Length: 393
Ligand code: LCS
Image (tube, rainbow, N blue to C red; front, side, top):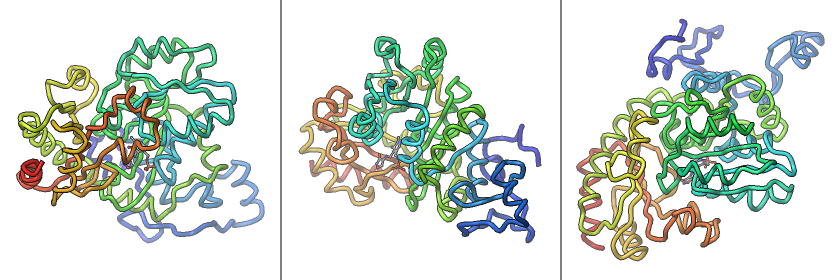
């Protein structure tokens, strides 16, 4: 079936489907490390590219390819490159796009290790990095140097929920010859399509919404065109950052319900945000669905919905936040996000603990910030759980 003009939910179910000799209705797990060549010539042809037959699972595998084609179709990209984790996607992109002496500009409040690996590891190879508040376009312009090669943004940023204008970044990137990379983990292509807004590369931790069930870790990269696709795939394959066929099967299973899950996650999040915003013990809240969000208008323009991650602070700061986290019963006290279950965590001491105190402060990751990933349970149960825990604060 030609899915070019199909709706998003139809693509979720059918994009990347394969026909096998048994007529399997879903994509099976091709749990094999290597593939039989029909002849010595066929083997040579697979390696030279004259044949597109499979060779070895680190290079390509039918289950993994089905997932890559599925997500590439959702993001309107040329092709997908599935990886063992979201961090493997990020480091494969850094490795492919940056040489020693190059400079990358990144959102200050990116997921902690996406910043830490540049500061602690890529710095050893003379890669320079500047971390700025990319929500302020002027800050990006000021950070550009003659050796700048990549503009890397995460929007909404984890965990500050600050929003960066993707289309405006695309204009700057074009002007200065930068590759624009967008981490689309928080939105998924259901709520935001960075490639359509001018980005060159989009990536995900599929651990989160795309798989959606908190049972695997994985990542994926999608490029707009073929040159970057080949460059990044080469790095992924040579560094061995590949996804495993069983992982790919799990993600293919999870992604089918992405739109129905996010619809429910988001409906619940809107209700939870409204509850928190008026609660006397809450000192501030950042959620793109609230008119109080500083980039509410940009969020409405760039995203087709506000998503389901909420950051907030309590009167009484970190101690009050700790009390809250220790007293919720339904929401799981755990890192990660984007699953069917509600999760609560404290970024300053957990996901972003590897970032220096000064850098955290500068990036807006305050000690009192509590992050809540709203699940698909009944909204009243989530709210009642928060209400009883807030009473104990
Ligand atoms: N990008 C974003 C926006 C993330 O939130 C994460 C993980 C990653 C990339 C890395 O993906 P991974 O390698 O874990 O699949 N974020 C986490 C978080 O907020 N809590 O635990 C992990």
